Image (cartoon, helix red, strand yellow):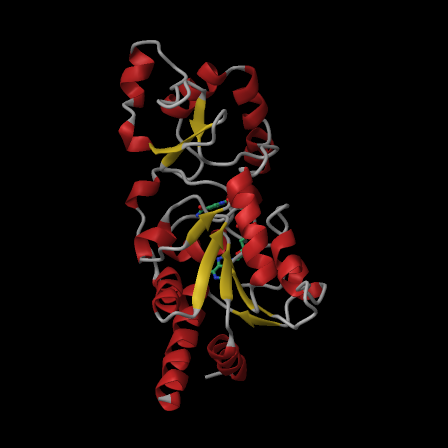
Length: 269
Ligand code: NAD
């Protein structure tokens, strides 16, 4: 066991309010590609990134066309239903059950933290299995709408059953503001935490990438510990925002940290 795994476990056991911030890297071992890793979708196809930057403007201009495209064209990440959580997601769910991890704030849209058993998850960039009303902010499970039928009956875009506002996917597209409720609570959790475990994110997408900085600068002047688990160094490593980096796969490293946390807690009994 490396010293840094011991250090991370000790920091988590000592913590009073630990959170995890996760990105696409934690789901690559479930088979979902990330965007900017060596086999990432953008790395392999830079044109796909340019197209993704136009989606929100397309929605604003013509929500019906946006929905037709979503329902008739393959999505970037494929059918997310078929993926299962990996040991990295499960390790974070275990840390929550042990009372150590208070929230997972994820950029991922795949719902795998919830499938792994985490109950306190903030989907910072939305959730692919939900729709969101842009007028009142209500969210709906996408299964409650028969979108294919709505398209066949020429009734797109789907409308909110509460206020009749236009629904879009809950997924936050580039240039789209982060929904206020999630943005506000994420900032609150980041400023409150004393340990932030940052897993599988390149930390270049803003405003999410501000959360580790907020966690670092706690308002009451007390120190927080920022731990990164990532396959490669990131701007957080390079700018000294993280206190240390456990370089490696989240699916291998996080379970080792949990094993050590359990050992430390057993010895404390
Ligand atoms: P990113 O693609 O920019 O970066 C992923 C990082 O994780 C890279 O630094 C990579 O080296 C690292 N990584 C890859 N596999 C790893 C592993 N097994 N263990 C440890 N590290 C690993 O991802 P991002 O920072 O999350 O930003 C991309 C945006 O794309 C996010 O906004 C997210 O919403 C979206 N996205 C989501 C999914 C998903 O829901 N699973 C997948 C792709 C992209």
